Image (cartoon, rainbow, N blue to C red; front, top):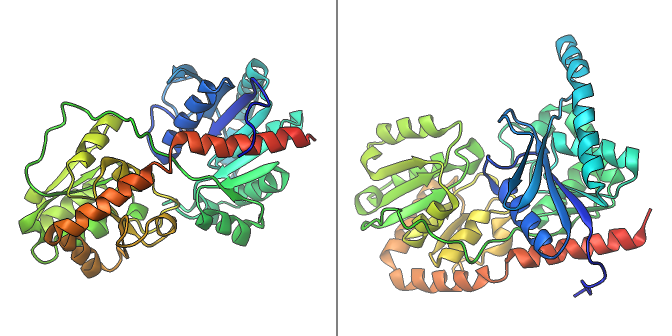
Length: 387
């Protein structure tokens, strides 16, 4: 392990496409990394895209957070005119942020409009640029990098200019190499807060309950989970809770009614961190049924809870979950196989508990301190190499 006593304070801007009050994997990753870096004595700010929440600057978890406008050029005449109108204000906001912190490192967490503007700051100031990909190039419901030539080109240019590149899994680093020509990326995984407290007000369930949480979008596969749950006698033996908010929530509710399982399925909406901890603590199993998953923080959360995890084979989960040892791997596109695995957890509690215990031990490998250890090693290399 590299010697981490080589500096006292480094000024670091973590630049994210989304942050508080919005929630998600990248938001959580950024928040925990910022907190741990600050705990270690670094001067850290989070710069994030202004998404119209009426925020300009806030203190989030003790970290200064700046909400910066990021208008993008477009090919239509109207889009060009809007960009020309909004660009001066955006440039001024980014200039103020830069002058306020004078960062020694720009660390982009998940490339979006935030990455495009960070590339501009890098070129204008020479500040070292690090890009961390979280699967945005392939695990995005809107297919931004398939649809937008501007974003594809910007990512190509940013990767070429970056001083270091990371991905949260091998799947992510391989996608950057195959589709975007960058073979330097190293894996820095996600982490989990092992001390996260449960919401004491969360109602305890007495019935066996399968729990899934996340953005309710097509890529997360909650519709596949719902279909599998309605297969055979699962709905007669257990309940299903799908926690989260998103564009597909109303559709899922309607489908549950069509399948005749609406009275066995709960959709509590967006959950707080404490509610997630509480819901998973009493789950029969935590299910991650994604069609594509770059890593899967939910797997770590399930491991932390000491409950069995049933995870998709599509993406990063297959890199960390050992099937039948510390979790169960299944293709959620095969509804019969998914239902069979869920039934196995109900029918063989001894195996389920053995797998759950092994998963809980695995969670200790994915602390946020270890994640930041990996980033600090990269920071050290970048800053010691110099321009």
